[in-house]
Image (tube, each protein chain N blue to C red):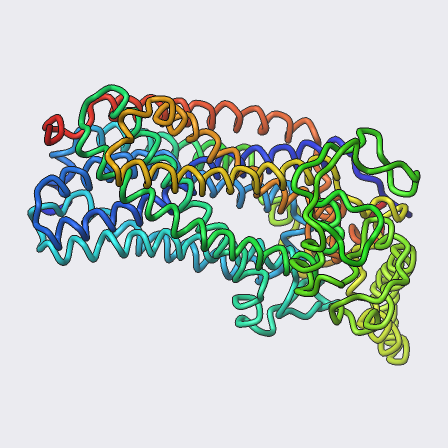
Length: 525
Length: 62
């Protein structure tokens, strides 16, 4: 007998996860980036011996500490939700998800908590060199913590290094290194942490601009802007390269996500990259309408970025639904090497895999060795499409195109804007003209929220763009959820909303007060 | 002594520690205990039963 799950359970569980992830990500990127900026500032202090650099370091370190303290452990709530709201998923992923998260917990605890204490309490108590090393190790520790979380996330986007065990219904890790060094994981880690570096640079420039607008602590502000703009510019290059690397991986492993990111319904050779576009609001796959009310594109760039070949065919949403095209890459499944399957074919194969799983259990119970062998063979052949068994129609495989498209383009647009801002600020600073450009100082200040919006938009692309999958091709969101009362999820949703909002207000208030106080001696001017 | 003096000398840090402690209390002693039981562990005593339940869920869910 088939069982249905209350869709409210899935919707509220998703909303709750999104809420906690978004709030958690308000704290994390600043920690990732500001820790390195502080370490760089302290390195200059140790190198030059000038006390002003010590004051600058201590000031930004205080803001780093506030953000770290308020944000610490907010990610734990996501792990609570796995066990309660997403028990099928948690069981199915087995130790693959658990191992990186456990390493993250241990690493975060020992590296960060040990060295962060020296960072804050160790001034004048340990040697300059040891203190500096602690600051760098705090930064490295924070970033390595992010590595493990992102490895776990990357596995959901591109499951690798595992084998499904039909006896335990768990995916078992067969190669830790395949999980850790999957190309999706590497690009995701580098792109995500470098987005944190850019966000922190924008933060430092924005706060320093406020000091310049207020005509106080100007020397500290100029020096901070110098460091942040250089750091931001260098890491922006890195961010761009890793963004390109991530898109290249998406083209290979999640072509539907790529098509949604670009609003590409019908595949093309020499496909252009949309620079700006307005989507046709009620566009549906296969309705023949133009996907765009208007758009501007760079010719051939999508083909080039996706496949490193300007002549390559980039499949659109409708091609991926219908199949039949020749994939540019050797697909994950060798069966599709010459010709991509339609989604209907994948649904059929998914159902075969699910049927095989059912038959395997029956054969085991009755001791039917031939049945065991046949069902295992059928399961193994069709397991790459296991999750498709839960789709009712081919169109269920399409993510929310407008949300994915606009989030992606907003992220890219803001990323380019940040690069221009870093260049302009550096140029004016070099010619001592920055303080005269009050509009630019105001703009820099108001760019801080934009950096957070860009960072969140990136995650929306990554997570909404891969829907309906919680594990790409293997498990859709609806199969991952626990069969629990939706009302309990609604209650905890609002509890989290309240707790996180209080924490955010606390952070903003404490941080604003500290910024108003400024460096303790009022700066060097 | 290092930590003791560090904590004594804190200004804004004391507020932050208070927030951290309240937050951890709310997370682990209220939310975790009363609102976020582990679904499978609370329903089944061993891994075999948990695996069988998930198998049934995956086979029958629509």
